Image (cartoon, rainbow, N blue to C red; front, top):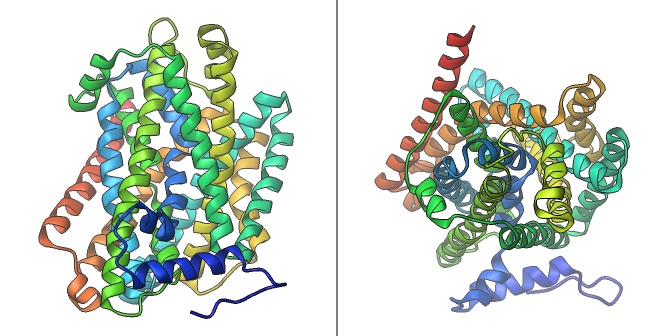
Length: 431
């Protein structure tokens, strides 16, 4: 493969592409091949550990202990299934979910999907942007609006890396994911954990009350993210296009492995959030429901190190997920309406609700949790579209999803719709 040389040096992305081509041409099977081809799932995994997860998981652990861990486990398994389908769609067709939805669905449905997806992108960025700014504000004792401005500049700076190719951005996002994971590993070592309670919470179905059901919907909305189902297919569609069936099968195999590993790690981090909140707050501080309160309570309960790690992970989560959210919003607009907005305009559109929320005096953590419920209601649209498109014989050919995968996917969609229906019924009953 001819590799482009700039100023006598090989750009990081060009080196990565050459390495990926070598991996596809050889019979690599181990971790070295996986690392060469990895990237898209690492990027989308950020959305599964964003500040919205912090808000819902803190409330779940503080109020209900380990009882809602099973929700996180189920949501993580659903996320792995659907992100694998999204990646597969991009690899096999060379098109992304938004583009294929526009081509295959009726215009009224396409317009509805676009509007709902844009709302979801704004709700996503509300959680991500506010969370990162809140962490910065608490760590450096800055006004929240000032922290939001700093976070906006930092996000834009990271997004500019995309002009240098996909690899620099993937490396930065991967580094931030590592920071979040290491912080929560340290938190688990500091927190007292009842592992028998953890096992029960993971494998025993429990919804103690109506508020628990509300949080369960929020956890699912915070874990299985609508915008990443669009983004993953876009990240895989033209990154290293398969030149034949052998390469395509190899890309699919390693894509599935990458999705399983990275989203499995993201799921473990989510569980660690609930476990930490349960260990630190459930006995004696079960009313902790806000990020700032969690930080203030961690200081005397677990010490300054735990509180500092909590804020560091929150900042890394907010910055990285806000970057990914902006990328997803760009892909959604470009795919549905065939128009690419300037990066600064796309960033401004998704930031406006965040500044409006703070300017109106809305509680930041409540806004985070509510935004996750909005995402859960937006989720069935891309999920149903993915099930239909990946099961389309003419579109996918020999790579059409098997009957078993289609059945599992439909069951997941029905489960999400059922939880949403439960939430609506509760809201109607309380009015």
